[in-house]
Length: 102
Image 1 (tube, rainbow, N blue to C red):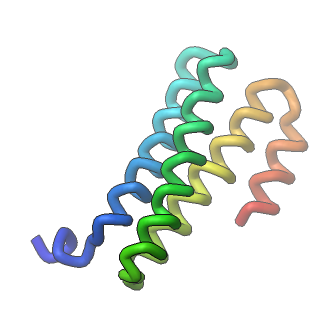
Image 2: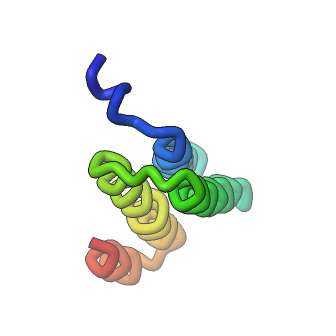
C-alpha cells in the first residue's frame, strides 16, 4: 500500500502515541477514573519525545509525519486530558481545555 511507503521510522512512535491516547480514552470511559489511567498519558509523553528525537536524529521529516504527530498530540494531550477532567467532574474546565487545545 502506498501509505506505508510514506511512513518513516519516527512515525511509528507517533502512531504509538496516538494509540496510547485512544486506549487511555477508552480505558477512562469503560472503567472510570483510576490512577492507572495516567500510565497511558506517561507512555504518550514518552513516545512523543522519542518521536521528536528520532525525527531530528534521522533528519527525515515528511509531510505525513508532521500531520500524524500533530494528530497524535491532539488526541493524547488535548482530548484525553479534557475527557479526564470531564469524568472527574470538572466539565466546564474539560470543555475549555479541549477548545484551547484545538
